[in-house]
Image 1: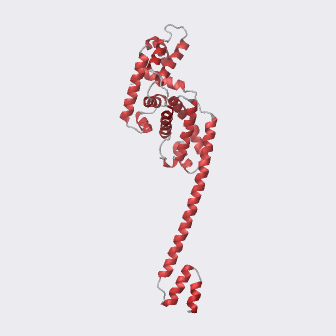
Image 2: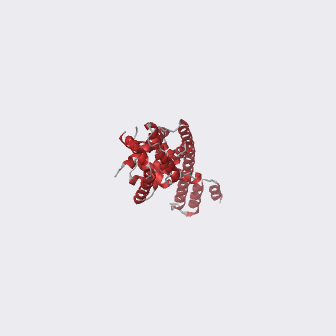
Image 3: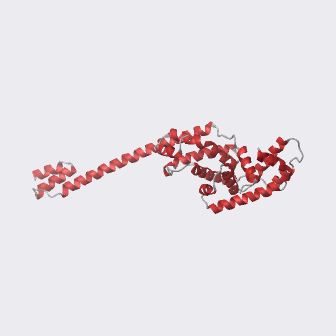
Length: 193
Length: 101
């Protein structure tokens, strides 16, 4: 796979094949980021499309010496924010998460099902976070960005990222530990798998 | 420091979207849009280049004309100036007038 520092000058000089290579390089992770934030397949496709068209429009202003990964994420996160502001993303209530946690089978022999349930509860807990917290969680846990990189993507201070992540973890912990004792064993199983 | 919550969240997110991949129509739409932009961009830059060439040609003409008019003639006198004006304007009307005069 070609390096961004090779691709950018070629794209800037009008090489469309190089742009297509760039698309294939980043399409999956950008799509997954959009999907994790928007939770809507159609929206994620639209966001990915807009992201690459916007990237093409602003390719001349790109620093040719650095990776495009944070920059592309910056575009797709901004587009996701705009999209969610228009759509008013429905948040799952905390009560709903608690209900689901309490409904987890306590002594079910079907571990696979229980494990699936745990993942679903986790997923819902993440969905119940505020947009700002969810974006930080997705970039940090799913995409493995550092705090400094997230600060660049969100155009804010590292301290702000730290505090959002801290609050998100606190919220997740509060939601999950409420009755996660039911699935402790499953959680450990999952951690060791 | 990472604890079990970090690992669980990380795994939940990564598992959830592990196989998600955009359909090929997204690529087609992007490349269609990019080609359209590229085409529009090149016709726009072509027009700008044409405009600059024209402006440059006019500028050079103006400089040459000014030099021809303002450079003192060895002959001096009205005929010399008239001739320069005629050459600068690339018109023969004044030249004929000055000869008849």
